[in-house]
Image (cartoon, rainbow, N blue to C red; front, side, top):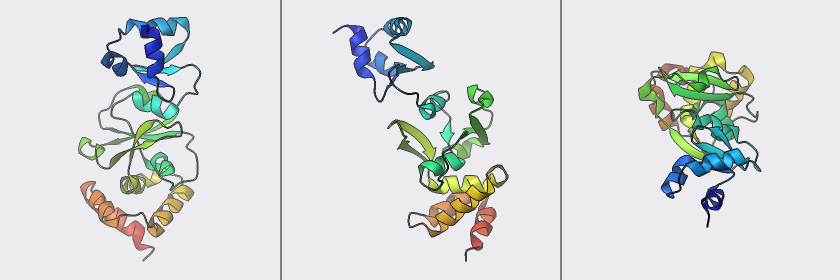
Length: 195
């Protein structure tokens, strides 16, 4: 089988990472050749799409930075705690981040201390069945409470109320994250309204 055919067979959900081509011992020059022929498209560094597929913006944006984690209302949308499809994606990166996402009009960028950036990361399947990293429910709740002034009030209130009445909530984890993030009192006072 020719290298070009092997590459085309490696696509998963319309996407292919250069690292997989290298792992399969296929010279990277064949990726360039397929791009020039118009069979595939380079959507970001190390990520290619089969031109027959729709672009998965979530995967493409996250591929722009290894530090990018979907957070706040974007994460809550994928966790079922917001019914509004994000127009702009909430992405959290560690303090000091300098890169492509800073100037992207489709991104609301949030910064956190490095020691908080890895709390509660999970991987989910997006609408195109690709793996993307988001913060779990409790970390996302902490984030919207911390960033309350940047979150739509109606969406904020609905998410807080839905979390409070949810069977899936984990208050121990929520308050553990809140302590680690130094927002324990904010989180506590937000939920005292329901008590």
